Length: 176
Figure 1: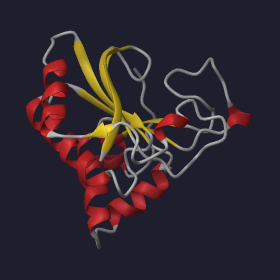
Figure 2: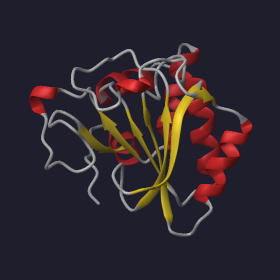
Figure 3: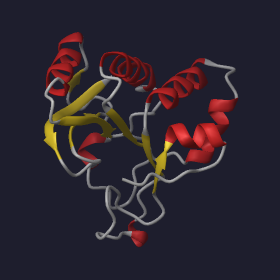
Figure 4: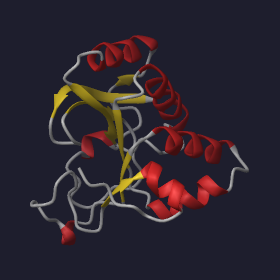
């Protein structure tokens, strides 16, 4: 997996102050996307153990409350193995830090995969959903753009409390 950048003091992509990993690669190609430079899977640089250490050092500050995974598309099949490892490692090393993830997939699509663990992609999705706290789902839709919305670009996107949604087997929206 490649990544384009790491923001170490972000206030726009989740609650509090966080670290954002901007992954490379996205096949959604949403019209009006604000990150088209992340669509190319070869953009940026390879994610390495040094990259992981950089993220861990940034998360180690007491005022940092979350890691956000965005891009590009973290859940693309070409990215999912590394994203799965990152979310597991962060959950172990920083269990009290929030993990946010942005995806063009809907919760309903991901939940079907979560419930059907027949292949590697499904197992990775299951692992990621088990580790993250908040999922911002859905493609950006330019005709539904709304700059008044917190943490999302268009009104079709939802901010989902992942762990409660898994427990209750229905979509539970995240409230700060």
